[in-house]
Length: 138
Image (cartoon, rainbow, N blue to C red; front, side):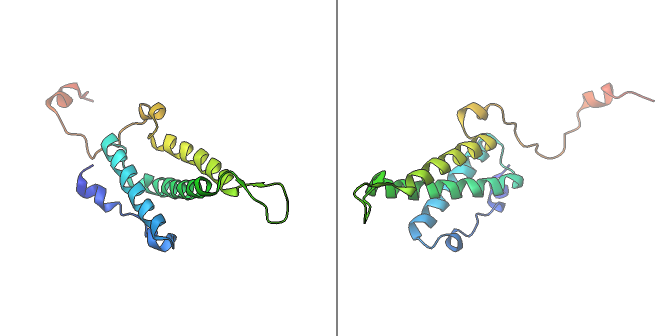
């Protein structure tokens, strides 16, 4: 797939999806990175755009939750109780991580599945002289 074909797979409108400019920048960066990896692997196709979009969304959610956990910890101080409570962002991180791993595997981005994915077929097959020789006559 050429660079112009890659450009035809335009990124979603991340600004419409995320009100926070940090999340928009993160989504744009992740989209470019994943699309570049798929392009290099030869597995970039229009059919994968929706899966890439979901992968980017989960990566943004993961990073957002990770920032919150890094700032506030895995246990939050309860307002009324003496015992703290689990930070819900910790659970969000775990769930997003599981979805990220699944989608990366589906797209062939992780090391294990990278060798199992096949390149996208590129156009028509070129005719060669051997094709006429091998063709059976009826």
